[in-house]
Length: 309
Image (cartoon, rainbow, N blue to C red):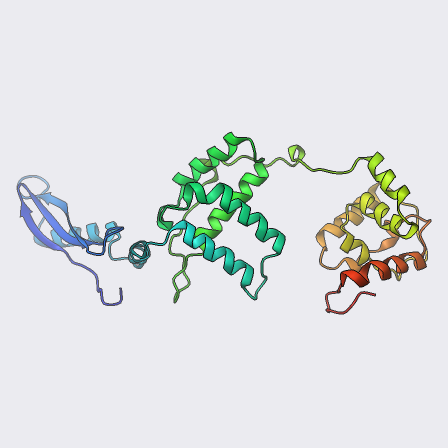
């Protein structure tokens, strides 16, 4: 591209018109194609002077985009023949093996299943440059018609398509080779309504049986996790320095405020005040014992990479 200084085109008379001829790169072809566009009538009303014809010819060439870097890079990438399947395999492997925030094994398995079942069959054999709103719209319609996926899963799977396409970048400039404006309205993506999402959870009877059949120190973990919605790792990371003066558990405003802190500060669960969540029956020693039992085999670590015990 650096050797191309831009085209002026060749102006000539063709029949009753002045036309400009110029070269244009074509998708899927190594050789450029000579194209022709009308400038103005050769005689009569609308005829332009020589300088006006040259200026109009340059405007036509610029409007075609044939001299732009973006068009050239798109043509080059298309001629390389990269398919969506090949790019998807590279992207998934890169996400798992990269040093900066590598992909979790559970997420890897989910995306692997997503690609194999939903994305690669309809899109795998398409050139990466052809994966835009049109084929993805057909994929969305297929997902919705199957009734196997909910709105949330459909949206998440389409995000995988977007990430695969966006991962194709120029090695030097790191610009996307196939920038696509994804239109959710055109794709007709289903709207995610949290109220209608499937959220499997234990009912009160199941939780009661689990708590009654567990050891006393495990009961603390079960009750706290079920009442607050915290993960096991968050329960084990709670700060115990404030556990001397426990107050009765409340489902009112105090609990809602505490749970918001848990959600918004998930990376620092040790800073959550335990006095707003635990029952008065718990004691400082019992919570410390639970942490000692559970943290040791799981190898729980704090943000400073030191054991939490």
